[in-house]
Image (cartoon, rainbow, N blue to C red; front, top):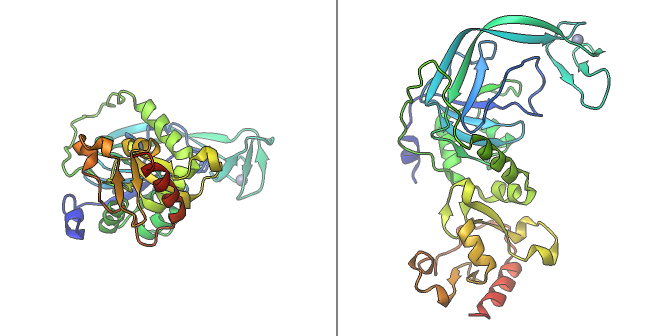
Length: 326
Ligand SMILES: [Zn+2]
């Protein structure tokens, strides 16, 4: 894919990263943020850059440490004159205090150093927004980390929930990590009403969290992007972290002994039907000759960069043990 092809489909428009609520999002006295991160992001007129987000813009949803996913803004709901509660430190009026889970009093204010049980709560009138991008959403599963996101940002501030990104460079970076955004998208006519939740939206969220909790997979995604080492770029949902040495034998999770594989390829690899030879070329068991989908993979070079840390001895051991059964 050339840079021009990557940039062409939606070359116009802005690009943003949205910080999602969670442990990393400091308690800023806000309430009412309830988003399914794969579907939409809510913000209001107290947030910097709120006026600038538009339909067609690229958005990368991020946590405090990495990129979670990407999509295009397909619809933007505007909810004028909403009531919002904002909590302040009762001593210095700052909103920059944090909730503590284990200590008492429950809140501590870093600007003034006081701790307290109850913040002062005030009511604001704000314009609320909800940006919908679920129709184009692609999970990133941390294939870009915080430092890489900062590199693509147009602002150096870590405090901003909505940060401007360099659109062309961001599109290029995610494409190089195996992410394939749809070229076609339509502006959804959702009027002023909140759209129905996606069926299974919660399930998708749970699945993303489960994928993300696996440290071995996380490390491999960071190393290789969302790219199957045998078949190439694939959706995050079907990409797995494969152990080149059976995990039960080593009980280790070494990036050097891991490959990103599409789930069906992973099964073949673990079942002794697919191996990688010493030239890092794919070999397929003769018993699969009747399955064109898989037999056609034979002879393909492994799709990993030349400077990959892959443990060639582990690949050779797997290859020897596998082809001995063919
Ligand atoms: Zn204070």
